[in-house]
Image 1 (spheres, rainbow, N blue to C red):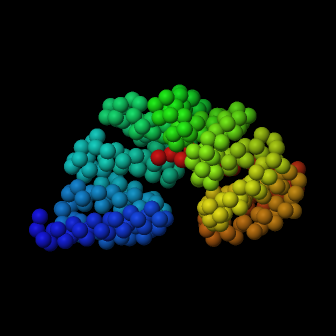
Image 2: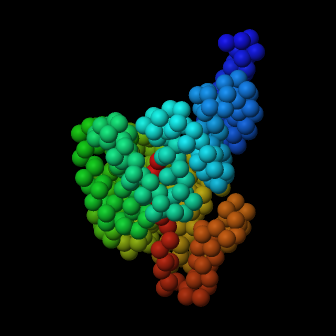
Image 3: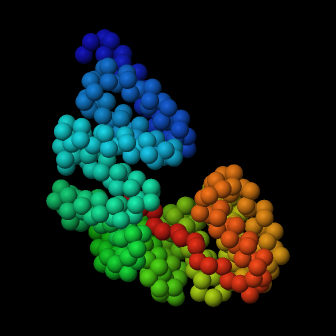
Length: 335
């Protein structure tokens, strides 16, 4: 390696390290910008198809995605996949990571059926490469089940996760985060398939484990708490649902931030269940305060913003006897 190449290698490594630190600290856009700076240096030092260059490209696509530019990230991953397959092989972990990212991006962009199909295609690859009970295979199976649910078949998602939970418990242990994720998915899709009472019982049994293993304010724990609160209302106890959201909202504001989408969704649900339990004046005031924040943060045509407008119109037109239509969803975090 020439002195110039060595200098470039060190510089690229330093920029990549800074980008990783910045991204993990929450600045995805900053990480993306640093990797855009590193990419031409890597290409000059290692060539367009060098492993170090491909690694920078993959990191760039990842942080572009996390910065919120899904279309750009899809293009970057799609362009990278055939190069990575040629250089590293179709079964290489980095290649499979790109395929996972493209499948997830399809779902995040609104095409749940495509995400489901792409994850279904990944399952036999993991079974062959990693083994049928490897953690990566179990993750792919769990993710396929979740996308089956999001593509419109919650009963199938529930049934697949019912088979997966005991395997997770045996292979990974009953308190492994992936096991907790599988159990949450089973509860969630049971509820989506119509068994709210059974789903609530499952979640209430799961919550103490979430709180002890992951922590009482871990995002997964907070998601489970939001689901319990929402389904409590949907099962007919609007007052208890309102009380649960009243406790959750300040925690979400402190942990996630006052303008995080989950916080805004919880505020909308607090208003909706407050109104459904009889205090329509308080619900109206809460929605009036929430709407301009949603319009600024999420956009005027975002589904959550539109839901708040509908709720406002619903309370105004129908008064205290109106029950909000179902809109809230807290599906499992699929990877």
